[in-house]
Length: 116
Image: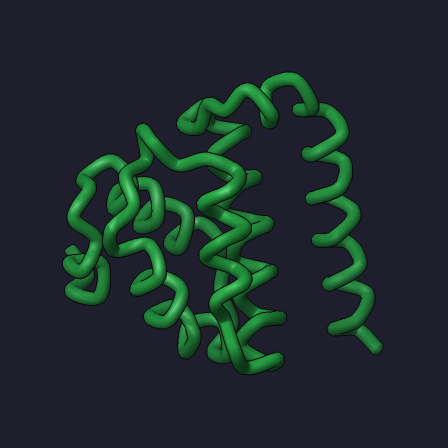
């Protein structure tokens, strides 16, 4: 197992992040900031992860550059959790189509920005 994931105490969350990061096809910049992203989840459990926790974690990022990369990680990690049915939250479940459409829109906008 990749050592940088050892900081996460919850096995389910660690495995989800490990699987997500291996399937995400991260570029060098994204890999560089992956440790920062992972460290923010060190005390979080997948079973208790909720929308408020995700927003709280995101709001604690101070650097605007890291915040942008972190937003990409958050959006795509949550999309991964939802698509693989690893994440349950009443807000998410009741708004699943809208959230997936927003995440897809964010991802497509990110791709367009990289091309330009």
